[in-house]
Length: 419
Image 1 (tube, rainbow, N blue to C red):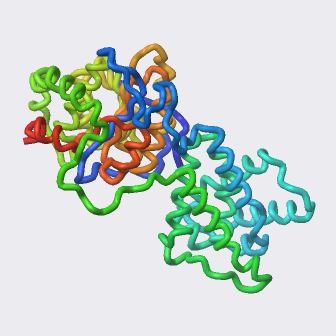
Image 2: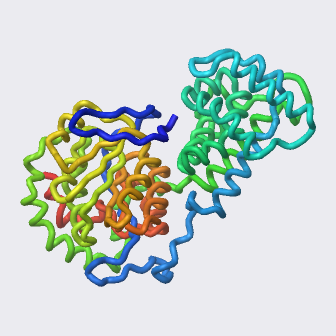
């Protein structure tokens, strides 16, 4: 389960928050996209790619938008209605995270609601299911196999309370996981087979739930990936800015080389120097002195940022001993253990008048893009960089990205930094 608390490492040691699922490491194909939110300090105003005014954000499924979140939660509330017979939940076996007694208590709650013939008392109803929903999430696959009726019921009854307690990103992640495991056959042992006995409508309840879960995922979570074919030459994602970006890079590459970055000890799957240079260059352009990072791994990129930023705050679900030891000698770095989706907005609020740049290396994929879109709404955020964005190039262009580090012209000019 995601941690809702905040704690940080000082020189005396590391405070540990409640764990959640581990972040993925860096992927072999390293690339990041920079999502613009502010006008360049040089005076060149960035306009949206489709000719929109600068103050109009691109149309996208922003999870922070009431217009998109409300239908999502409504759909999940509908799915969470008592579709499942109380007897089915009552016979669910104990698992590593949910006791048989808790399944029985949930069954009794459904039976009592069914006896009244009235709709659930929203939103209090969802809050009463939150603890069980969190227990199910801790052992999601096991609980879905052992008790599909109870697991899906608990998760969908509690999704509104989850959104309230941990934020919309946690709710979107839950929809994504349910889509992959239930609606897309990611958990073959579960399947969407008819239940024995009863009317056909009730026999097919899981298939019905899977259908609406799939709709919610495709509508509010998914970011379409590019086709599998790879172009031999990758053009600039925003050609109008190539000359401007080239000017910025030309006048900052010397500072990067002299920063001491090549004296650092690298590890496998470290951020590429060409990527780190582009991030540094845009920080200089926007006069950023505060960098926030989500996804620390072994701390290489975090240490790189400390060479040119006045202060760095880095967040990960688990800070390894290697990263802790590596970064302990850098006095301008603070490490936080917890969920970056929750902690990054909190850290921004702590210093509202400070211009910041954000580097996201966890969560990954479409959830990273959704997080970037929400973080760029904070007024002090100059830009957001997202790592490992190779599969999403076309969609990122629609969402407002203005630079990708694998653009052919950039690699020809600065790929040697990785040698």
